[in-house]
Structure formats: C-alpha cells, structure tokens
Length: 124
Image (tube, rainbow, N blue to C red; front, top):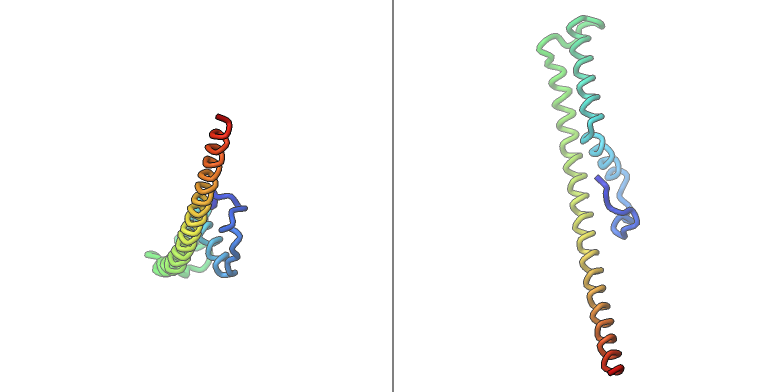
C-alpha cells in the first residue's frame, strides 16, 4: 500500500491510534495471509463439526459459521473503507504539495532563464 517515500512531508502527519490500527487491519485483510487463515478457519470449523472431533456445536448447514463470517465481513468492510479514505486523503495532500513544489520550481527556472538571457546579452 505504501510505495511513496517515507520522507515526503505529507507522510510526517501523525494519525491517531485507531486510524493506525485500521490501516494495519486493512493491510492484513487485503493479504493472502488473511485469505489462507480464513480458509483454514472454515475448514477446521467444518471438520470439527462433521467428524465430531469436539462436541458438535454447529451442525450442518453451519448457521453459526455463517453468522461468524457475516460479522467478520461487517466489521472488516468499514475498516477497509476508512483506510482507503485516509489513503485518498494522503494522495490528495501529496498531489497538492507536489503541485506547489512544481510551481515553485517553474518560477525558479524562469528566473534562471532570465539571468542567463541577461548574461548572454552582456557577453555579446
């Protein structure tokens, strides 16, 4: 998610603890590790209930498992959206900063060009 330089002035902004947690959770929820851990969780849940490894607590069709997965989805979706909104905000701030920096560089280049023109006229 972060391919920008860490020394960019926009990245120096300090986010709150909850915002940083949301970013970390969002980063994990969008990873292969999360997908594989969710698959393992569902397979273990299913195996435990089909083969009665432990007392059968959620018989087929696994209504409780569906509830657990729906709760996970209901919690993770807004967290991901909050993180994406913050990333969009950082991108807008970065673009505005870069625009201002480019305008300043353009003015400086124009001044240098004027100085070079004056030097060239004096040499002739």
